[in-house]
Length: 481
Image (cartoon, rainbow, N blue to C red; front, top):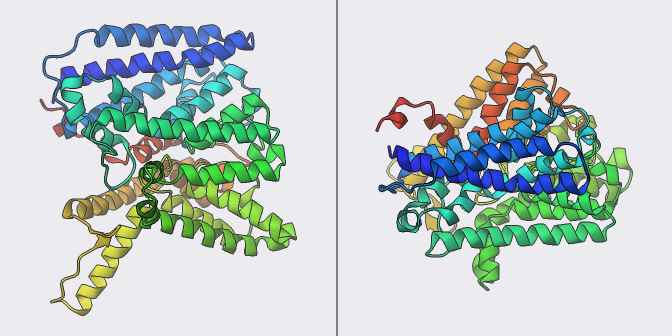
C-alpha cells in the first residue's frame, strides 16, 4: 500500500473541508451569531493539519484499487469526525456521538436526525448541516481529483471515482478525469441553482430556498422545519421539490448526453425508463390507496408523488406522516427504500440498475434449469453484462444482506419495536432518512442507544460508499504494504 500517497490525499481532503467551513462561518457573521469560534477552531486545525501533511508531494504517486478504496473510506470518516466539531463545540448538540451521527447523516445524504427540533439550531449551524448534504451528494473525492498531482492522478484516479461513485460500474464522461469531475459538478451546480430560483419564485424565503436546494441536490432531506416541506403548505413548492428529487435521482451521464445533443442515446437508457416507470406506478397505487384520506384525485396524487419521489431517491423530505397511511402504501414505500435511485446519481439504495441485473440473473437461472444446455447471456442497456459486473452485483447483494442482518440483530438489543429496528437500518444503509415507528417522519433517532447510533453510523457510511471501501478498513490484507 502506498501510505505516503494516502496521507498526502487525506491532507488535501482536510484542506478542502477546512475551506468549505468558511461558508457557514460567513453565515454566522452575516447573522451576527455567537458561534464563530465553533467553526474557527476546526478550520484552523483542518487547514493547518492538512497543509502540514500534504506540503510535500510523495515521489511515488501511484494509486490502485486498494489505495483508492482506503482513501475514500478514511476521507469520509475524517470529514464526519471534524465536521461534527462545530455542533459539539457550540453546545447546540452537546453529545459528540450525536453530533457525529448528525454529520455522518449529512455527508452521506441520509437525513436521519437525532434532533427533535431542528429549528432550535442557529442559522450558521443550519447552513452547515444542509451544506454537508450538498458536499456529500456528488462526493467530495470527485472534487479532490481536480487538485491531485497531474502526473499520476489523471491516469489512475479512476480507482477513487470507482470507490466513491454509486452504481455497479463507473466510467469517464470524457477522456480526462479532471474534465469529467468539472462536468459533473457543473451539472450538479446548475440544477441546484435552477431549483433555488424556482423556490424563491414560489415564495419560499431565500435562506430556506438555499438550504432546501442543498438538501434536494444531495438527496439528503435534512429539513430546517419540524414539519419538513409540509411547513410551507404550498402545492407549487411540493411539485418543484418533488420534480427535482426525481431529477437528482437520474444518472448524471444522461444529463451529459442531453447537453451533448445525444437525445436518442439519452432516451434509450433502460435504467432511467424503469426508474421513471417505478415512480409512476408507485404514485398511482399509493394515490388510489390514500384517496379516502384526502378526498380528491389531485391531493392524493400530490402527496403520493412527493413521498414516492422522496423515498425512491432516498431524499427523505416529507409533506405527510406516511406512518398514518394504510399498510399497503407503507409497504410500497419500504420497498422503494431498498430499490433506490439510478446508478451515477446522488441517490442511495441498492440502485435500479442492480435490481434489474439481479432480476435478469434470476431469469437466466430459471431458463438454465428448464433447458440446461441453453446458453443465455445477460444484457443490460443493449450490451452483454461482463462477468466482472455480474460478479460485482452478486457480491454486493450478498454483503448487503449480511450487513443488514447483523445491523438488525444489534439494533434488536435496543429493545425497540420490530418496525423501528427494521426500518431504521433500512433508512440508514440505503441513505433514506426517515423510517417507520419511532423513527418515522414525525420522530427522530435521538432516543436510540449509543450502540444503535454507532451501528447506524457505520451503515450510513457503508451504504453511501457501496459497502466495500468501509469493509476494507477492517481487513488485515488492506493494511499490508
